[in-house]
Length: 283
Image (cartoon, rainbow, N blue to C red; front, side, top):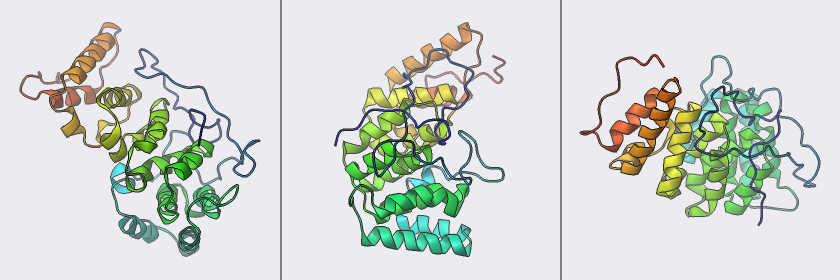
């Protein structure tokens, strides 16, 4: 299946780029905003995300979005236990029905599968704190393959795209999902980037792409804790060390603050030889 290589959906979906104020020397190129399309017809605007969806690049008050550890590394059984414990009775019943439907009718059926409709409803039904996890569970239950995941990703909202990225490690054993990761890494949406640098990226991105993903996290303020297998992949990587040193020098020369995480990653590349970070960085 051929898909356009697009960046996040239009404003109103929760993938709009974060309002970054620092645009100097972005290590990756942003792509233009894409228009969302209707799942059934392939044309026209899709409905905006439900009122339960968080605003772009924000975290609902009093909640912490599950990170890659929960969504990308947990087994479906673990994730289901975690999610259902936090849902009220109506939401729990809706999720049970959605998972049963997906399991009974997996794969792709007609212009749109019933489980794709449930993915679109998850924010309204489960609330923003649990919607990502509910979508991941539905994708698992539907046994979505790389083609189905691509369909959901390219036609979906930012929340739906995050769910696809979180589900990749368990549903796509090979590199077929890499175009989705690469597309997410071209955005400045910090939540999408966080999902993109999980276990699937650690497993399948080549060294060049992975280094740029780390640099993108530093540029956009995504904590490097989100980068799966960081310690192992950064170890002894002299090219990554060079890129980090150059990036730090550019920011210092421009009078800009060097991200604290940069020193941490630089230390990982060659712990004995790398000088420690300054006690305080006043930019």
